[in-house]
Image (cartoon, rainbow, N blue to C red):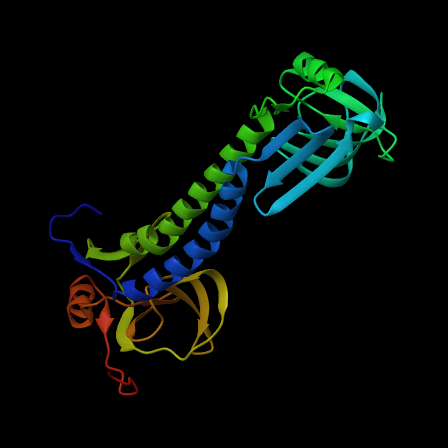
Length: 300
């Protein structure tokens, strides 16, 4: 509808309620997403320290801390290994932090304290029921220091794996998409709802398109409908678009709220709630609708 004499009416604004719902749902999305991001960004600490005749293996991730001390004299073997195809039996497996019991096809079950990389050292000790696997960045330097009992501190390479970047991108992307969808639902959709009267018809703009209702032969009146139930559509703050049972009859609703508004009756029932109801009635009357009074209307 592009006639220059068309009149445009906005629905009754209910922005305050939309903001409250948006804030509540956004918080419900942001809080767990922030927790996941913190968990992903939090850098784990893993050290392998040789000192005082012991190998002390320490891993820390947030409040989670593990510490294992092995007497050097009780280490029977320290073997370089490539750890591939492992499966977690018990413990934690997060990007850059693998601590727990893992089973590997080549070496069997081990107590793994590593950054999940493959280049490892498997230690066999009479004090440990299960071989211990670690991943010092300088594997050869670690093995020399272990043989000599030389005080040293080693750490894993600490590289972020591909899965870490995928997880980070997924959490960030999903959070952004959900927040954008909420913004569309609570702000863009109500902003697009408007009533244009002209050319013998009422055109209602909605989020996904428009609906045109010819006005010739219709009746329009002020009306406050009796509450009913939804048949189909979106019952959102500031945006009620769809089919409802109002006044015990099926009614198309294109409004910001289903309280005081205008009922248009023709081939079906249409409820709208322009902010300027009197001006709206005059406009539809000028385009062919018959405006009737409703003595049962409860005015505010």
